[in-house]
Length: 103
View (tube, rainbow, N blue to C red):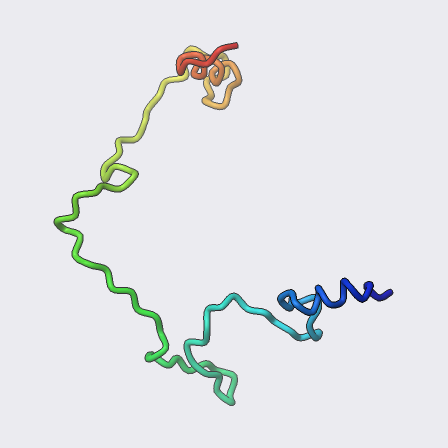
């Protein structure tokens, strides 16, 4: 079954996918090669091609992260529920109502 001639022209302009290419076509993910394959099946890394990221000095940086640097673990009591579990449906509804939820 062949696509219509109009569709054939549109397909030629689109990017090649792995389903349209030869059986061994691998599109990749644009990362690039960091070295070369050896004839013995190994891989030799070329350190001129390896990406390096330089981080500036952030000791005097004024912005803070989204999460605090030190977080205390929460110890909530579930003694008033029948199952004593935080996953209990009644406990979920109670917490929801405390947060301003309406039923």
